[in-house]
Image (cartoon, rainbow, N blue to C red; front, side, top):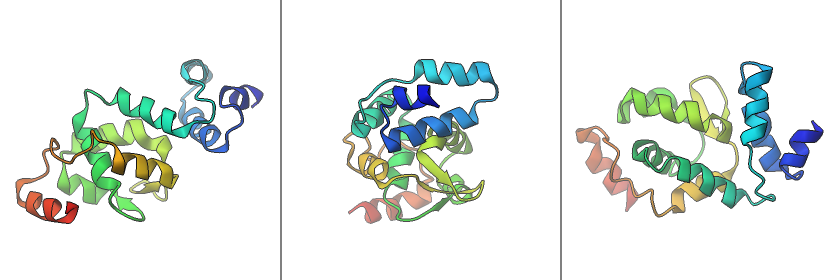
Length: 146
């Protein structure tokens, strides 16, 4: 635990994110890899979010899904999201963003902390344009954005 705290400099939110990633590691080797790959953001969660966002540079669909979900207050049902975008997008989202969300149930998620929701909402690269949202729902989403 000392290693976790030192990696995150004791920042409670960064530490919580790291602990969630470690808890999901299937074995000690994978957990050690999570620790090795953890970067020290000095408690700057915006820098941590920006690094995560940068990892998604080539996955505009997940970026757009995060932008969409960030506009929802409260929890979101993964089954509902699957009606808006392709299931593969939701799978990539769930596999990579799990530690940034509270899993209220396996299918019902909420942002772990509002700061990440705000980051996704305000991020310039999240303009809700690239995600192949089902054609019949696009006018509703566009009206909702305005």
